[in-house]
Length: 570
Image 1 (cartoon, helix red, strand yellow):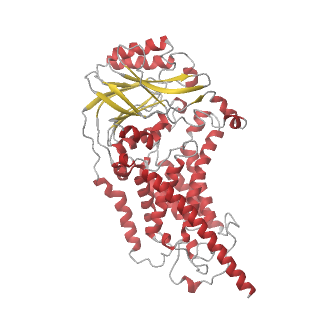
Image 2 (image 1 turned 180 degrees about the horizontal axis):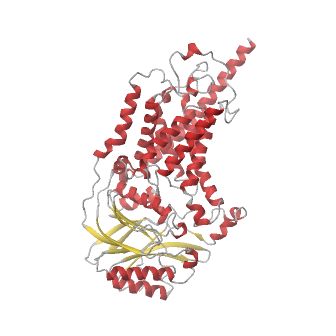
Image 3 (image 1 turned 90 degrees about the vertical axis):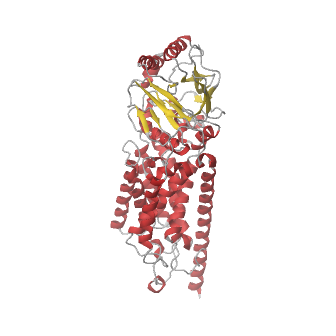
């Protein structure tokens, strides 16, 4: 329940121990209640300079640690300590300062994490603008967890762990959906693919893994805190928090990740034809990229390795083979020589729009199969410009996307007919779509026995974008217990097992091919069955907590203000 207006441990009071951490025994005898300042009168507040700079240093270390937990550094073990450091800074200050601190942390992390946006666009505006949308999301989390301290139960160890865990997931899932379909990058669960927590992916997907990572961070922070414990905490509270945190982080190792065959196996070949730098110049030469992929496919055929299915990258046919006979001839000759159905990617241009397709090309054919998969989730500002007329007046970079890509309303599923007579359903997504859990889970629930992600990463060159994307594929493989394939035009391409382990991978900016036998599976994990129900539960809970706590805090401060005015006039 919310505290009474006269309570000295109210989070709105400057003398309140909850503004430090979150209360201590006999605090009422030590401090005399006084009228609080008006909410938001100072953004930074009256903290000593040394304390402020110490907080800034902790925020910087937390941002660097979280950045390093993702590729290309990939030090996953830094994630939970980094979150614990962030929590230790924001849970000792008021709501405005917590929001400010969280924004600084988010800005430092996001600018470093998606630096590849600058590489791809050649300008700073799209990079900063996209980063700022994510900063706003995390700032909302900082505000929510701070004002939630208006409720006494949220200041206990377990209450804080629950609130911070649920609201982090809620904000994470919300920003993955809005605006413009969201930006589902840097989900902290992805950084746990090599950690014990990753073993829980089949049981609750992104929601469960992210939630437990934050819970462990809060418990770790509370167990090593030098600040006084909350009133009512026992002497064994900190040891219990530490033991629980270690249990959360270690015990998932006991959960096995299946890799067995349920529908046989399939030999998959991945062709990475490469797009020489500068990529725009390479794509400007008709059939250059198609020829690169055809050449590597001929090399795959010459190796003598048996393959059931070959996968090329997104836009690997740089011209639509249905309308360009030279492109069709290059693809047809390569497919005939490798003698296996081949998944290729191409773009169809209309009068004012374009559509991104992938389709199967069978030996002996002269065009892709009539059944295609079209990209459902084009990237805003990368593949189309929302509010083009308005945005174009603000940024000249919109000219780089001269033709908007349209979304295709179709499920992420294709069926491939193998030479041995089998028909294998493929759960398919194109490029960034691997980041969108509902999209991939739909294909799996519809029968997909393997996840296939054709992608085109030439814009990003040697940056971490393609390895971050490959990390998401590994998480999807673990989450849905499916083998996974990422086929990139220029790297990184990768084949993974259902437990997320990497069978084989290429380097960036090279021409190469991969071949591996992978198990096909049909059973559905709990994460696949639940779909995005847990995500929406977390989103709703976060909105209720944020709105309800803000309302309760404002009401509390208003009541305290009236009480103070009455005392002054009495």
